[in-house]
Length: 194
Ligand SMILES: O=C(CO)[C@@H](O)[C@H](O)[C@H](O)[C@H](O)COP(=O)(O)O
Ligand SMILES: [Zn+2]
Image (tube, rainbow, N blue to C red):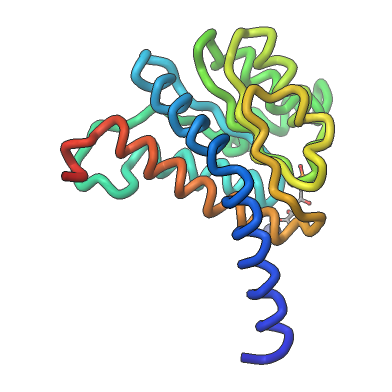
């Protein structure tokens, strides 16, 4: 392994180790909240920009199709970063800041949960999404980084990766998403894990 690869891998492992050690309880709480939202017939909406838009879509796919369970019903999760026509008309005709908030107005309902992903916690369109979700009595779980930014105080559960490096934060968010998917499947389909 070259020095560069070794340094990046070591950094990534250390950021993950710190985050999952410090935030284990809050992650468990987030897993219970998501499972409860689905049990009660509500749904998961997800949003984020760039790599975090891809993370939002990745997680939605795990819920809608399946993760570890071999055979289970589809779970309702929708990434708000996928529809090019909706995104461009909101950005072009209204404002880029509204791309997620407007879709939450359209698809969100009381009792739903928004998983808002932002490494800075300060992206205006993610903040607008959280404000809109609050107005609609949704729960908000933030996948954040740095100091959590403005998003930290808007979330019911703020999961803040203790790093200032966007890439290391995203790598930790990716693992966090997989852990939450498994936690939710284990709670909703315990018979498949016996
Ligand atoms: O994937 C990466 C960097 O690794 C980028 O696309 C990154 O997601 C973008 O710069 C985002 O716009 C950053 O937004 P945020 O995480 O601060 O909300
Ligand atoms: Zn990236």
